[in-house]
Structure formats: structure tokens, C-alpha cells
Image (cartoon, rainbow, N blue to C red; front, top):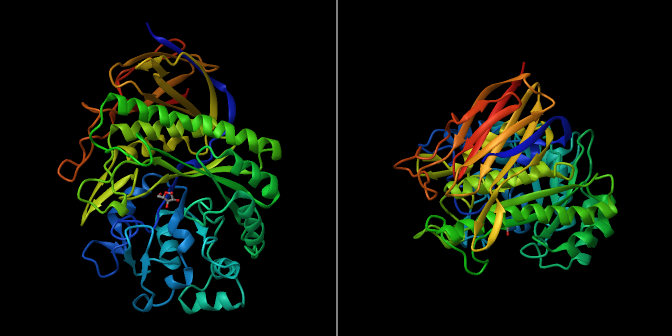
Length: 495
Ligand code: AHR
């Protein structure tokens, strides 16, 4: 028996902001150093110190924005340590992440250089936890002031004549925790104060993002919206997918079906979290002017055996691919409120899209999902209803499939996730409003023989998308046989 799903090709529910496909790179483990920055003297081919192979692969994702320098690191980062001649930059201890020496070789100039290479927008997170108002204010002046000023002069002395374009600026990170252990009332006041001196210079218009809640801390959202909504453009939310618990995490590669099920269930929880945080935001901002910025999401497992526990290096399997697909579908659904989301993190940390080892590099299953789904960026989100089946485990049920569709430039893209690791899904997709007036342009599916499959430096392309052949046209739409534990994308063009 097939499951019927109706895609309303003529009913747009809003635009999916491309910024939902954002990334995050922190001074943590081997993300910045080794993963992105190798230095100009490195034998690994690089452009002004930034490795070419990684940039080339990342460019294929159409990355819309990149958040930096943290994370927890942001609230102990002092930007002046990362400018000027590299050999004389301050060496500090990265106390949050492994206690290693941070030589500050990757600083503001190097970050903008990376953004230029990636053709992506910078999203800078400022230091509220251990930094001063003056320090934050001067950083913005250094980056964006055009004309004569003390900070603009320093920028010029360091080789950059013109200011950079900077839109996204975060005022602190996780200020309820590593960013200062504050109460929401206290942080709301600090936010009001710090953001006052985050100036808009010339035609550079900043989009100011307030540090938001951890997971289901709805009171944090309530207080921030009540006390500071008119002074912010965005409010963040962090939620990681952690099978087991924060205290007792589980490995990335060895898991059973119960762990798989729990991971799917926790990924779907993002829908509830956004719904409830948005409902609170609606009370203070019914026009939905303030964006919800999910600037940290992804899986968090035990580190790979033998690696530094502070480096958060984990492998990435078909399970991560499903987590990515489910999250992106949830963000699409909430595109009226979710303006941006940032996968944590870009390279070698948590749910990375790329892993490196010396001069070697591999693309993870999560990379492939981000690449397959990029067609949804800035497209119209289409209404969908129907039967999504059930995936049951120990008496608990989840939907078997999640589906999302969007329309742009006469093309409709339909993405699908099958959460069930044992059963394929037979779907009858009706394209209401487009009957008979479209053709199949392409289809790709990410699926592998085993749900534990992942890419290694010995076998870097074990998990990779293949042509999706199990799709056929019907008089009303499409018939699709979606393999167990798979993620797919189908492209249709209007005739
Ligand atoms: O992404 C790793 C860490 O998770 C970030 O530094 C912090 O913001 C969050 O707790």
C-alpha cells in the first residue's frame, strides 16, 4: 500500500532563507587549525594559509554565512590578540577546548580572507563574558568604519584599506553557561548596553543577534523578548542531538537500533523547540521581525577513541545524514521565523561536513545532504499534507518519512528522508496545481548498505549520493520507492 502525500505546487508558505544553510567554525580542536588554516609555509596547498582542497569542497555547498570565532571560545577571545604581524601575536591558552596553546595566527583578517574564498557572509560573535563594551565597540569600528578613526587607522596599518562588509553580529554566546553563567534578566540588561555601542557605520547595516536559550529554556526567551526585543534583529537558540545524555554520551560508530531511534526522535524534537520558542516570540513580535537564529545544531557523540576529549572529533555515518535531513526539513517548515541556522561545526568538530588528516580530506554523509539540499536556498516553501507512515520502536512511533518541497525559477525540488532503517517507503506524491505540466529533471539518493557506514581516509567515497532510479511519473505526480534509512532529492521542471 502506498502512502499519499500532496505537494501544493501553487501554495507558497514563505521563502526558505539561504541562511538556514549556514555553518560554524570555532577555535576548537582541529577545526580552524589544520582543518581550514595550515599557514603559508605549509606543504599542503593553500591560499594565504587557507587550505585549497577544503575551500574547493566547501564552495560546492553554496555556504551562505559562517559564524566565528565561537562558541564558548568567543567569550574569551580578545580580537586585538589576532591582528598585526603573526609572529608577534599573543600566545594564549584555549581553556575551554583542550587547554592547548592558541597562537592567534588565524584572526580577523584571516577570517575575512576565508569568507572571501568561500564567497560567504561573515557572522562574527563578540565577547560579552570576559570582554568590555569598549573592546566590542572597537572591533566593530575596526572592521566596518570607513574614514579617519583610531581603529580604521590600525586596520589600514595592518594592510586592509577599505572596511569589510559585515552584517551578522552576535552579542555574546551561551551567556547562560560558558559565556558568563548569567541569569536572563542580567544578560538582557547587558545585551541592551553592549549593543548600544555596536555602531552602524556608513551604509554597513548590522543585524544584531542576542544570545539565546539553551534547548527548552523558555524563560530565557521570554525574558529576552520582554526586555530587549526592539533592540535586536535575531535571537539565538542552541540544541544538540545527543543520544544518551549530556553526562553519558554515546559513540558515533557503534550504535544499535534503539540508539538510532532515539537519535531520530531527538532530531525531530527541534520542531517542538522552535514551535514553543516562536510562540513566545510571537507575543512580543507578532510581525515576526526578530529572526530565530539556530546558530548551533548537530550531533554530539563521544570523541573518537584515542583523540583529545577537548577536541570533539567524531565520525559521521548515515545516521548523521538523517539528522541533517530532518533538521533542514524542520527549519524549512518554520521559515517564517527561522532566519538562520548554523551546523556545528564545519571541519573536524562534532557533525562536521569535512574531516581531514594531514593532507588528506574526506566528505562526510552530512556534507552530501547539505550539498543535495542546497537547491532549497531562497526558494518558496510549498505546503504539504498527507500520510507519512510510522516508524515504531518499543511502542513509540515516529513518522517514517519527512518531506519538504520548494519552488524557484520554474523548478520544484522535493527532498525526502526515510527514518526507518528496516523498511523502504512507497510514496505516491501528488503535485497539486501542476498536474501533467512538469517533467522529471534529476534525482539523487544517499543510501548505503549499512546504517553504520561512513567514509574513512582508506575508503573516502563509501557513502556518496547515487542516481535515484526508484522514481516514476504518474498522471498526477510521482511514485517513489524510498529506500530504508535514506535521504533523497528530486528535481522537477515546469513544461
Ligand atoms: O560547538 C561546541 C560548543 O557547544 C560551543 O562552543 C558552545 O557554544 C556550545 O556549548
